[in-house]
Length: 380
Length: 106
Ligand SMILES: [Zn+2]
Image (tube, rainbow over all chains, first blue to last red; front, side, top):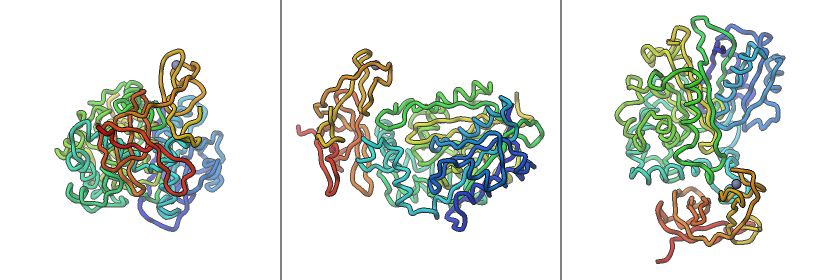
């Protein structure tokens, strides 16, 4: 059985001064300190890609930087799902006995290490090189297409269907030190913000951030350790041309994780759900069964995803407001759920949180990974 | 068979001889069963499933009548549900003309 024994998360934002290795090292040291582990104790090192590094060997690069000489080293790339995919692999290494102290790291100077234009064109390469990239679509436009189809199918407009999700994430971030955007916003603010890719406005889109996140995975069971009770994945397509808009893979992925954990989704107390855009969050909440079809925005407006709601989601503010530094952005949800399950979330603590679920997607709703977590004292 | 990505202004729809599956993104075998591939030129009729407008113009996802989904540029007035016809346009400096969807004239 594998546990998260340490977690580290930096502030996110436009924070010049560190390169990608610097952000990774900072997050890694936070996680190691949290676990009481030294670099020489680490025997497994898994590091996510960083677009500003564009390096073939991210784990070796960071290992050398920190003086870690692991038995197992691996770089990983499944887009926004990379962080959770690395944690799933770390749990497998621990369960198999191949490693016992596995450090999982991501970090990037995505905001200050490159221009927005370069970042946008790098990310657009998730499109098909021959059939989609020449059309000139960007990642916001791919998600805008998903939003267009979603709003049309359910007869919604952006104000009702999407904007309340951005408002809810911002309300969470207001309570979270380190979040990039903490000023509350309203539905009016969201729909009045600059159109980025109709029907998405600026506040429907996550920012580009600098930052890092890391966790230490190993055998555990002490009071602060959080059990990785089950993981699951689904990878059904890469390109939007071949996606099934009613079965992107989230349901399958979460079902596999919940089955592995022996947990019903109704028994989960706190959630971390990938939210690169408001439409991402709407589609994932609905496919996971946490909102009825076409009702994610309405549920957000009703407070369902708030701290005191029935389904607290992204109590750190999510990608939309805590920020998005690439692979580390998807790991921030994980670190937040770990803090919740330890009872260390301060004034944003979800009372009695014993079981958590984290879900991430990469590409254009392409790669899906879910982790079910529980406290040492949580229901078995 | 050459298509618009080779400079021939047409969309080629691939199909499987064995299982009948159809797809758009070029492959050497059927992604469902591994079977051999046949090709046909799309007649160009379809219906819009999604649209967006960004800095570089309007983009649509269109379900062609042959049963495949194609990303292309489009007339910015198009909305989901609109019947469309496939044409090809190149912006200045672009090496090939790309799929461009216009409303089907009635
Ligand atoms: Zn076939």
